[in-house]
Each structure stands twice: as C-alpha cells, then as structure tokens.
Image (tube, rainbow, N blue to C red; front, side):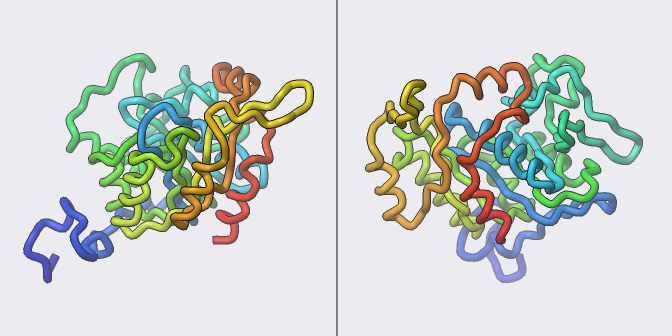
Length: 272
C-alpha cells in the first residue's frame, strides 16, 4: 500500500489488513452477513457445527448459504446428502446446489464428476479458487452465509480473512483442546486480521445418560471452559456426542436433527 514498505497482502504488520481491498459478490448476489467457522486442527467437528448452524438458521426462516472452503477435505455435501449432485453453471456464473430444505451449498466436491477424486493443487491456485467460490457463484439473496474453513492458519484461511468481508468468526474445539495452543492460534489469527470472534463452540462436550439424561463429561470437567472464558472468549454452545446425529450425518440428513444447543449463539448472530 501507499504508506507501507512491504507487500501488505503477505503480512499482517500493523494495520495492513484493514487496507487490503475485499472482493465483492457478483451483481446477482446480495449477502447481508458472512461468518467463518474455523478450528485449530481437523477432526473437532467444524463442518458439523457449520451444517447445524446453517440448518437451525434456515428453520428460523432466514435465507442461508454455505461455502465449503475446505477444498482438499470437503465434507459439507456428505452431511446434506449431496454427494451425487453437481453444481450447475453457464458461460458467466456457477450456481449452488440446494439442500432438501433450501440451503444454498457450494463446494469443490460439487464441481467434480467423481466425488472421490482428490484435488491436488498448489497453494496459489487454491487461494484463487476460494475467492471464485465467493465471487463467481450466484447465491441470490442471502441473509446469512457460513463459510466452513479448512483447519489451521495456513494459506486458505489467510486468503479468506484478507479478501472476504467476514463479519465474525466462530471457533470450534473439542473439550481436551479448548485451552490448547491450536485454539489460541486460531483466536490470535482472527485478532491479527481484525475480525471479531463471536464465540466458541465446544463439540463432543458430553454424552447424555439414556436413563436419567445426566450429562457425562468424558473428557473432564468445566475447568477448561472456565479457563478460556477468563481470557475473554465465551463458550456459547456445548454439543454432545450423539449417535443419532452421527446417523443423520452419515445418511445425509443433518437437516432433520433437532437441537437447542445453538440457541445462544444464534441469538447473538441475529442481533449483530
């Protein structure tokens, strides 16, 4: 930039991030709010939280879209039963696939003839592609867009935070990792990019006793939760290990899952 002596797009020095020009959606798309769901590492349920959050917002009457930005490990289509679907397109634009209940979904897997085909691209190509998923797809009117981020703090999250107009970040963690370095790295990255953190979702927080409904915390007590909240970041939702939910994900019917566990998080998002 004009008053910098380095490439602002490759760093986060000072206030450079606030001066990088954001990309805009196409003229056929109007996105009111955009939230990124991220995690410090894979396997903690980031895509699950994205799918549940989108489903619950859709049930409340909002127009909802999901972009699966985990290009090399996409799992959103599986949750919604879309593995046999392909996104449409014309000479100018691509079009998302609709879920059974009307959520607009875009993923690299929806552009492949074979969903099991690996995407083997170098970083710069992937970074350009994730911007295209935002700018060259016709989503129409969207109240809430949720971006399922790849895990970690590498190239793709950096591109998304720098180039896309993100309103806030939701961090997903498992109980044993709640106060670990990987979670702190995710939080610190969002802070360095000047993007507010909405809150934290603790996945696999407990199981419910089938007889008495008591919450059994397999990975320990609430001390980790208390510790992270002492740092100023609130745990807004605790999701259980639920075999019924796993079945619905495996069968592509996550929209049929009923939960109130995300209510507090949703209230905060709707107020912003």
